[in-house]
Image 1 (cartoon, rainbow, N blue to C red):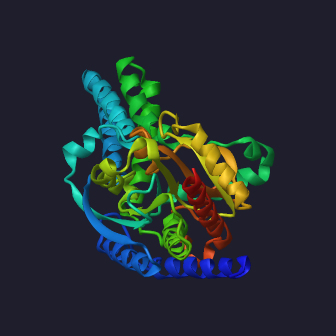
Image 2 (cartoon, one colour; image 1 turned 120 degrees about the horizontal axis):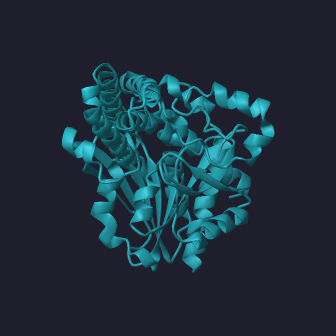
Image 3 (tube, rainbow, N blue to C red; image 1 turned 90 degrees about the vertical axis):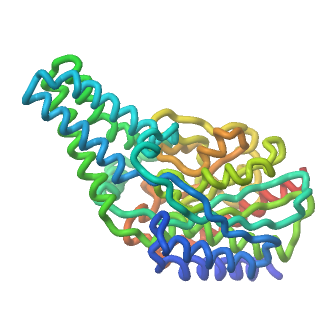
Length: 402
């Protein structure tokens, strides 16, 4: 088969997966998400994966409604303290406690709020294996099949206006603004203003807290997007990779093709995957490649991530290996970027695995149609998705030779 024909075949598979799953409303923990997981498992079997399991795991719900509530509590305490100075100590403690709880939640800490105020729910992880179980090397390729709600805060017009007005600034910037710090600033200023008896700080905190409450409340009540870019683009790569590896097996490497559920609650199903499979994934022989939103025009490798504190991924040599695999595949892979949001990679990185994440940018260094209702199959850049597939296969081949 010629390279051109092979590329056309893979793109046909990529389109099939995205077009089949995008119409399904796949909110975290929903029936639609379960339907997508079931279909994806069946499609991976048809693609030639050796063993495919759809695994039901628990996850702790949260994100928008929970954090909106925390912001509202801090905002209310600040307003009460302005009316009644005797409530300043309560507002100081409450505001700082809410700020700490939000920081803990969005950065995948102990997640005290979720454990106290939500009940575990069920989601499905799809786990497919290609290659011998006793292979000396293992490559885990991660995706997620749930989709996010939209909201006015995700409007990308400002980003595009900045790119048009200040192209040099955008060209030099490899890390997005820390949006989670903006969310935390309201409760923090309420706490500090109450502690320092500063009406100015308290009022500023109330204003920022009210804005965060409104933004997160809007997300909590809004529609689920089609999620073609985020993240059916990666699910499609799993299926296409299974087809290619089944037809051209690689000795020396076992590939786990994994799609987690409930990623859009700021990590859900990945907790269950790690708990269930850590024993079969030795740190010294397992590499993890996370694919997340890879359907924008430019393929990008993240060096690290962190909503509050930036954490570079462990093992820089693995990131170099991924970059070399991209070069062998003839793919231009941009490096140097870091994310101020979180992906499933953070759990694997903290567990000690060699991991990196492939994402994609457009000309404004935004994720195309991110959390928008326009994130549809027809708006996906399938050329970039195909490039991510080739990098994945080149990396697997490289590991097989090592």
